[in-house]
Image (cartoon, rainbow, N blue to C red; front, side):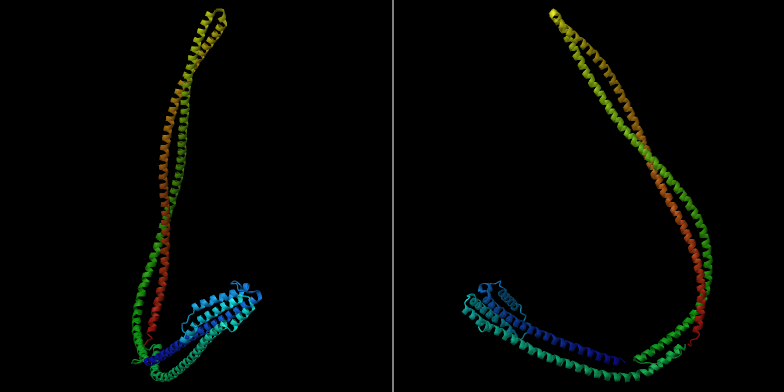
Length: 526
């Protein structure tokens, strides 16, 4: 079989190699045909260019006859500008011309296009010069140059070069197509030969398989049928290096392994039956223990729930106490703010009273000044009275006035003395008021200090109460979690009990399966 496989692989490799070689040859022909086609298209493009150039040249001559040389020969005139644009395109085309894959003759022909175009455009310059004169005889000479002169000769040169290139490309194309057809024929003959060899190989392979496979396969089939009936005493007895022989040997080894396995399964089935009995007792004990655990866990869960409720009650009380302390702290803070405001107002009042004392002192100074003025006025009045007495009869009127002035000065002195007494009384009262206000300020300051102390203590108590509330709340949450955990334990214990009961049922099923397995194993002949 290995030899047959080797031959088959060799044939397949030959087919693949032939196909690859044929494809590469065809690809080479296709590439060269594409190259000759490109060269032929380049030549055809040159043909179109020279035809366009002569056409534009004739149209320019017609424009000269129609509109005159000045307008028709301008660089921006329609037909003339088209001819100039074509010249730029031709020069760029010649510069970019790719002559890869051309023969020497084709390359020489393409290289001859540039001189031919130079000759054409030189002749075109002569034609333009003739047309520019506007003379009829020069117009006739220009048309003669276009048709039979330098322009016509250049046109003929370009066409001759193009025909030469196209003829060469056509010849090469025909040769390549002939070679391509010959390569296709060789590939076809190769495939036919390989097909004949393959058919001969298949005939040989069928005969060999019939001889080397049918009999061993029959023996293998007999052993397989016996194995299906539970008879492990049959063997193929095949030996050798062929695939069928190795399959027979493998089947014999498999039957031997099954025989050993059946013996081991029989032993294990007996041991399993004994282990199942022990497992049945253990699961029964586990189920009873799980039921007991579930009952105890239920009792603990009830106690934990009661503890959780008590702790929650304490937490609620702590929260209420915290709220009350927060109210006290808020009121104490407000009282401290009121005391501070009172201190500020007392200080303002003290400043006002102090300014009143200063003002009364200034009034006293003014009164002293008025008293001094009154005394001087009284002295002046006395002097005036004396002078009036000296004057005699003529000074009586002046004496009367001096007397009145003296009386006014005296009254002013008495009034200023009364004002001075009153100012002194005001100053005394002001000093007393200042002292009293200072006492009030100190008292309010002490009250403010006490309020601040109370506020600080209340804040500390608030923080302590908050910590205590959080602790009690955490304890309540923990107690609740403990209760939930105990409940989960009880539920898990109950679930375990039910699971153990189901395990006990499965154990009975395993015991039945073990007995059935032992019965089935007993049907094998070892």
